[in-house]
Image (tube, rainbow, N blue to C red; front, side, top):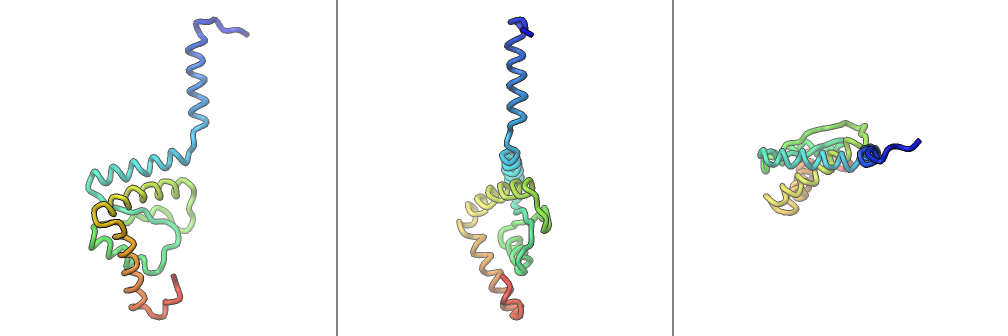
Length: 132
């Protein structure tokens, strides 16, 4: 069946739009959502990192130190069961936040703080030294 020529351009545009929407990469969308949320939080004056999965035993010490020293809060977005959407959104959110925190407090500020928290934890809990 042939369509009249006057319907072809509009139909072509609609068809192309439907194809593009259906072929979008969901991971790219989730990464964009994470970055956008982080940028919004930074603009609002909030520093935060998303957490998920099994955290090391010294993570409470680290989170407490980060809050006290840099004003960084932590938002647990999932436990041990994590799907792609949570991982993509959280990791892209954290990339933006980690850059901002590094910009404000020094490139490896969080890494140094994590080392310090791990050392303090191990001193306070010598029986747990075998744990990461």
